[in-house]
Length: 184
Image 1: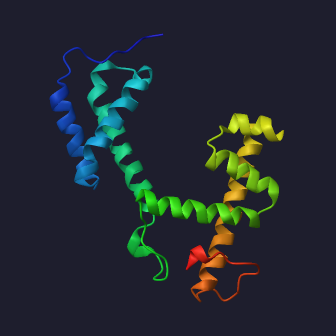
Image 2: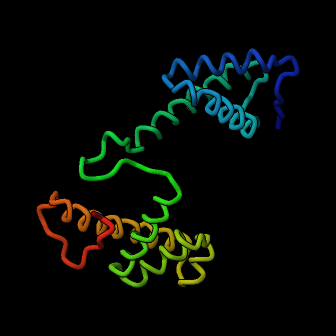
């Protein structure tokens, strides 16, 4: 097997500038360009064995950077923006006190879930247990444990949505059960 290495005459400063231009042309925000370039370089160096000819290193890395830019833009499109939230929901916040108050609120909703779901969420999302350890603890395969956690997250999200939207008067179906006042 032929082992390709980075060409010794690679001008790293010029390469980073070229990659930055590629990423900017794809529409990545200026504050994110350097992160995307760094990610592309890391990806290229990790996958260097896939490159067949050393002289094609620069175009190959540019393609990786273009793909990384597209990946970044797609990831950002999946993130909700504050202006996309309904009027009755607060904007996204990230202060420690606010997040802790939300954590207490969400924890109180766990009692609305089946015990197996609540236990899986407590273990994974609150206590930080790995999927492997969770699977062993509850007697499932790792994919089974992942499915349990995903299903539990969907059920928790549904309970929060039903309760909090009914308190705000936005839900056509009232929540069946006790709503937590933290949704006010």
